[in-house]
Length: 169
Image (cartoon, rainbow, N blue to C red):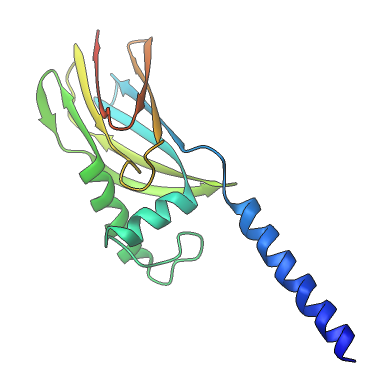
C-alpha cells in the first residue's frame, strides 16, 4: 500500500510541474491594433496580451487581486484593468494628449483581448503612442503596434525599455 501511495504522490507532483511548465511561454509579446474610424470619429484599439502575464502585472502593481478567467468581482477587475492600461498605454493625436477609455476584455485561448477607444477624433495626421504594457514584469517584453488611418497601415516593434512610437499620416 505504501508503494502505491508513493507512486501516486510522485506522479501527481510530476503532473503539476509539467502543467506549470506548459502554462509558461518562452517569449513576452503583446500586439496592439489601432484603427481610426472616420465615420464614428473614434480611434478603436485592441490589445492582445498573454492573460497570465497581465494577471501577474495587475497583482504586483496593486491594481487587482482577482482571477482574470473567473473573476469574483468583475467590476473591481474592470477598474483595475482600466487603471493599469491608462497608466501603461497613452495616446497623443496630433500632439494632443487624449483620454483612452477602457471598454472591456475577453479571453481567447491564452490571451486577453483588451478593448479601448478614444472618442471625438476629427482627423488624424499623427499618432504618438506610449506602450509600456508588462515592461515592469519582463525585461524582454516586446510590444508590437499596428496603426491604420484612412487605409494606411503603419507598424512598429517596441522592446523594453523603448516605449514610445510616432506615426505620421
